[in-house]
Image 1 (cartoon, rainbow, N blue to C red):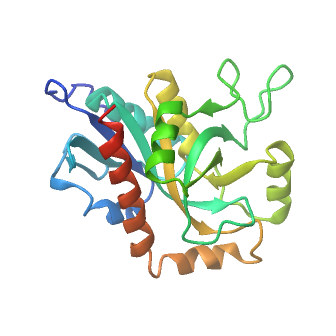
Image 2 (tube, helix red, strand yellow):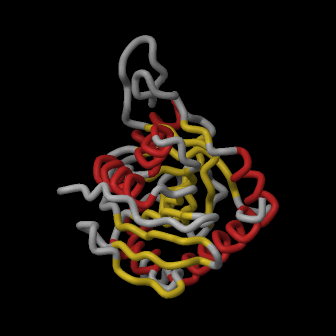
Length: 246
């Protein structure tokens, strides 16, 4: 992939939001979120630019997994220079009281498949933070606009949770983990390197901690995903309206 590093022109006082989704079926849920969208042809995946209220927004399909997420986040960061990065999509629940369809917000990120040896914490890339914390102003704004929205630790790794043994191992290291996915921490690491506030705002699509066949549960979620994504859009829109006033 050839990366176009030419920045897009900016307007004085413009607030920019980069919205990233891993899969085309997640991305297809975002198509109605933007006002006056148009294709941004400088990406090798689906990418559109438009507005949510007064925020200039770029939506990009990253592809599945940490490398795809990191590369395309960095590409978008170079070109779009966002004020905020938002990772949207689905995730697996790591708490028993999170049913399918529940929206969840990251307050921190880590990896569940990284170990760099003695002197590092499990999940820590050496010389990087053990966890990537979400900016407190972002969390406080969500607490004002959506006080019932669950906030917690997102764990990220390059496999779809295959068994309860893997989940038990994850929870041994991160007993307070809320959700698991395959991209969020890689995006957060790029955001940390570029000093950009970053969140994951995702939907519980399956519950591997409690459900005996969470792959089937995940598949069934996609039969009617629209209401959950409409709720996610409402949460983001209400957050941005207040956040941009500060």
